[in-house]
Amino acid sequence: MTYEKLGAQPLDYMPCQYGRSKLVFRGPVRDMTGRYAAFLGGTETYGKFLRQPYPALVERRLGTPCVNLGWPNSGVDVLLNDPEIMLAASRACVTVLQVPGAQNLSNRFYKVHPRRNDRFVEASPILRAMYNEVDFTEFHFTRHMLGYLAYVCPERFEVVRDELQDAWVARMKLLLARIDGPAILLWMARRAPEDRVAAPHDTANPAFITRAMLNAIKDHAAGFVDATASAAALEAGSAGMVHSELEAIAASELPGPVAHDEAAKALEPMLRTYLDA
Image 1 (cartoon, one colour):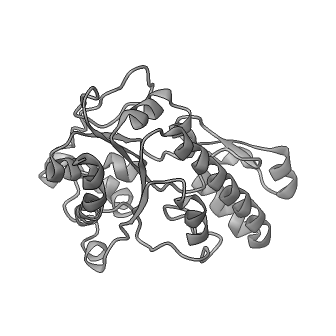
Image 2 (tube, helix red, strand yellow):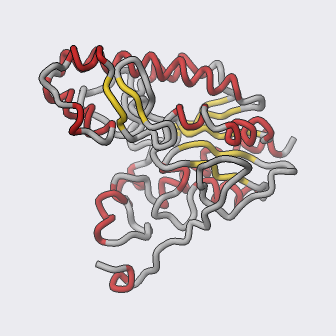
């Protein structure tokens, strides 16, 4: 079905670039010579299918330029490896870092694409030996690969998951250390942070993140904001999002306008302490 048949037009994300970064961010482009807030994250921060993602809502509420540095499906690696992102975050009055999942990062079991972190590149000899019955050439995305490994053998998968969780904690500490200014962690998900992962095959964002992992990095951040979607946000779902019929499933897996509004409201008090100073 086309957008015309749906009575809507495809969104103009006003793509832009900053400095020498190879990444194309959501615009409009923002001036970073003055005071501003930086927003780092994945598809949710980018605001796929949304007219106004939460960084734009924060800007409207606070009146301070908000630079959207969200990158679809990003993990920790793309943030760490892009000097322009690190520079923008370090020069900001405050940085909001959406908590990423642990599946989209290179580790001792597999490598991901340096920019498109959801892309599976190759399995290490260790993982191939652990799952010698699996043909890893069939996988192109981490989510598909991990879901299949969990299905083949949940017990062996726990070893993989533990490695991802340990690598995530170490990489997040490094990321926060490289941001010179204050960084606020944002939990934006359908579920609240849990004490443990409910099921080995659960790869819903942010995948495999537990309360203990968040506690391990909280002291390295300036603050933590829990924007777990409310019952109203969950019920609203993708209502108000702009997408074609073919994109309906993808849109349904992302937070909708109500969830983004809740995130902006949750962030406002803490952001004011830095932007009004």
